[in-house]
Length: 125
Image (cartoon, rainbow, N blue to C red; front, side):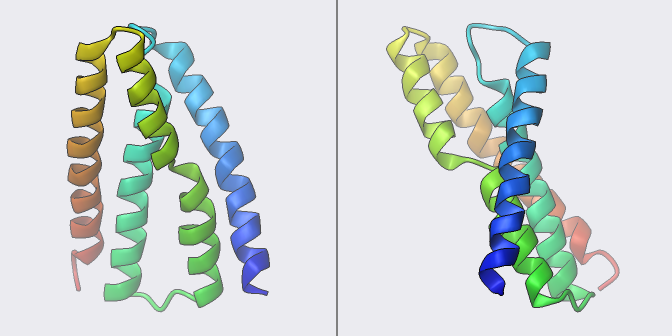
């Protein structure tokens, strides 16, 4: 039964990532910078850390929901492999500066928003 929850979450997360990334990329266009992937990874870092921290510290979240949400939805909503691939492509297309900025920005903002989500989830515990 766990695999069904993970699969359903993964299905919805992947579709959500596609739609959100497509929308974000249509709003911005600077040197083929992959803003959509940056956005979904930062949002996913925040939301996963918030929910996990909230669940650990205050709520008894059912195991099946956590599998659906964390492993399934957020696991497929965020994408480390695409982030790495886009970094390589930016570098190969002679956008070395943008490749470096994308790499550093993704790591710093991802960690910042993960810490923010975790901290907000702990408030009141």
